[in-house]
Image (cartoon, rainbow, N blue to C red):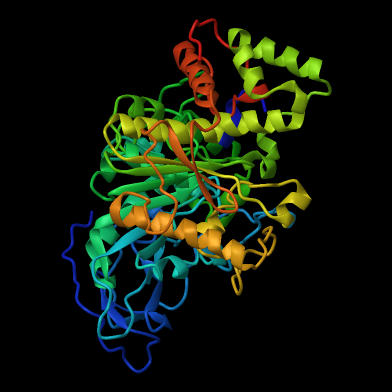
Length: 559
């Protein structure tokens, strides 16, 4: 991977309603489960077990179609009668996956009208429903371009059985969710554009605040959690003033603290978000907003297959670069849990540069690119194991640095923060050289491991054994304890200490193993690299890591 050029940059780049609560009421004869009253109307759920109900396909905002395309989400229209909530809503329009992809999991239905969420609740049809249960709101990954909430990997039943209410949220993707354009900014009351997917997530959180009590959840105890682009979204919501008070704890799994394009100003050698949008419109033969809105949604997504979105620094939803927000201590002051996987890049080889043919060539490249930081780099990523070092350096520059930066910055503002490292692996991964690959922790977090569980068709599936199920039970126990109390300290499990206690972390191997000082020197090196990029102002730090990094500026900072 090399420096991001203009087209590649484009490619990388409150309803305050009354809460209508109360217990479940008797369902009409033609419904599938108990009925709850929401701000939009009555919903009939689907009973999964005596103590578990799911409500699917709940509209939390108006369809973002026609003239509402590329506008902030509006309140959903109310309905009359009882709405059947036993079927997932359509996923947001997205490109189909290559059939050989490990992550292939295409939605059964797609539509531009896609702003729906799903709720699993331990509130059943019995006489003693759940009350004031912790709420966990999931933001899916997929590079802000894909995501299928109907996938079994995101089934919230196992987590809900641990006494939490689980909400999964769809949000606009790709060019439909993140396009910035001068005409869009001109028609906006705030004179901004580009963050529609993030605004969707906030609208969903406002819906949760107004309605979740009806499902047995506590609107004052909401944990926002997500993986990969979902982890990035969690960071964006931590940084957004518009999300203030909408959640009370956060979990970022394999997040990446990217450089973001600024709305109408070039930065770090890259074009502005509006310039990218104008360029994209011209490439599509649609130079005006009217022309862009006239293109069918599916056609638009197919025609922009080379565009991978990033949120925009617009001064409104995102005031400044994430690194700056966290340095200034302006992020949401909430407890945080964050971490990454040992084999992140093994399933994302496109993020890593080619492996040099010899140790001598490798060391020469490191010294050319890193200068006085080269010795520290080679100590962490030695030439004796070329492929492993190339993959580990890329992993740490994107995911490891981000996770440790998050927990250290959150600790600096006096908030409890906890770091993890997911190292667990199993035979199907080892056979493919994908040990602890990107997102491989997700089935363990959602309890989709062990006898009788389901996963996407191409996923490298863990053995359906008691040992694998036990690790999943442990991770669910930690995650739900954190959602309940802000500390991952379930009874009978190894203690997970605060990161501020001697850089403590939890390793997830075949079982949870506490440790301290994860990958010594890793964070210091990559923080020094990012600091130089920021000081120089000419090269962004996203993707320009490892042997893909341009030569360092001549600053004197050392790790």
